[in-house]
Image (cartoon, rainbow, N blue to C red; front, side):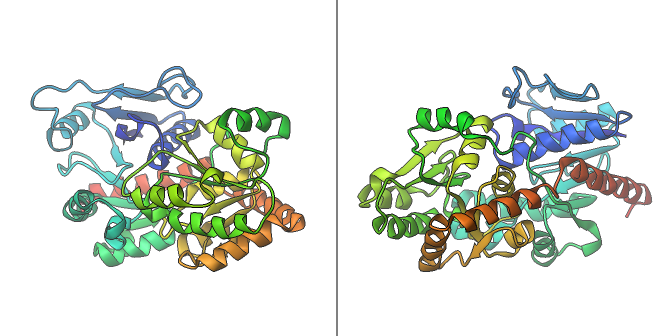
Amino acid sequence: MRIALDGIPLNQELTGVGHYTLELARALAAGSSADEVEIVSPLAFLPLPGDSGASNGAPPNLKFIRANVGSITRHWWTIGLPRYVQKRSFDLFHGTNFEVPLWKKCPTVLTIHDLSLFLFPEVHEKTRVKRAHRRLPLMARAATMIITPGESVRQEVCEHLKISAAKVVAVPEAPRNVFRRLGSAETLAVGKRLGIGDDFLLYVGTIEPRKNLLRLVQAFTEVAAGRPGTLQLVLAGKRGWLTQDLFDFVETSAMKESVKFTGYLTDEELCALYSSCRAFIYPSLYEGFGLPVLEAMACGAPVIASAIPSIAAVTGRAACLVAPEDVSQLARTMRDVIEDQGRQQELSLAGQQRASMFSWAETARLTREVYSEAIARFARGS
């Protein structure tokens, strides 16, 4: 099978979609040496985690290709990519970031990671919401098959985009291999370099309204105000959009000095923080999957997260789940966990066991099944 994947998510610092694209491509190539896997983009790739260049460390049947574009083909999705796909005679194109070519030159699979732009438009910039409402229904109809990261998003796609259930398949993601429990000797240097003490709570992800971080800071303020010592709240991730209310609240908070924004961190830095935090907090209002939760679990962090369908499906019984709108409940749960070492240990062990149930090899196997179905459907003209 000759497979092409959208490489545009690899043209910037990797976040959720970028990691998904890269790990899936690597696992697809590693899982079948007979397959040719190509990540294609009209833009230059950034160096990838652990590599000095985009292709270093990749299986030999995985290629990173920057396509040459001109004055016409620079219109990538409408002209450049369809021409490239046709020229290279791919068996299938996988749009890993909500986009596929509308010209049907070969079977296409579309990954829809979530529908937050539809279901929570108020936490996004208006231009992005308008674009999603205009383009995503077109992409969903054009794609031969659709992948979602979980059953809740699968149901949402069928309901809100009016897509047949037979066309949409839920394929879970997984934590990357780099995320494993580290000992204190490996974590102390990272904490010291970042200005983080021994006693801290952690959030990882883009700083944006959907992640519900204003309520997290409010809950932390309640917990820290009644607790002697130097408890910190560490918010790790690059700054996104519509964040001014959060930063204004932190700036005027009595706990201002205890809240630390680290910005974007490397995998090695994240692994050290996951492994040494008192608890990992993920109070998101909505998620398609919630990959940082699995990363934290893989590193042994006790997890407190939102009681929303996607997160509940990922965590099983291995996390403390709270209503994301309830600041008081979140504060109580945070206090209960950080004051009970037995509970921390219980959550740590349960989380590591839960995370071990997910693998990119399995994600790739299930994805390849979707590819086969897409190729068969395309051949039938259905």
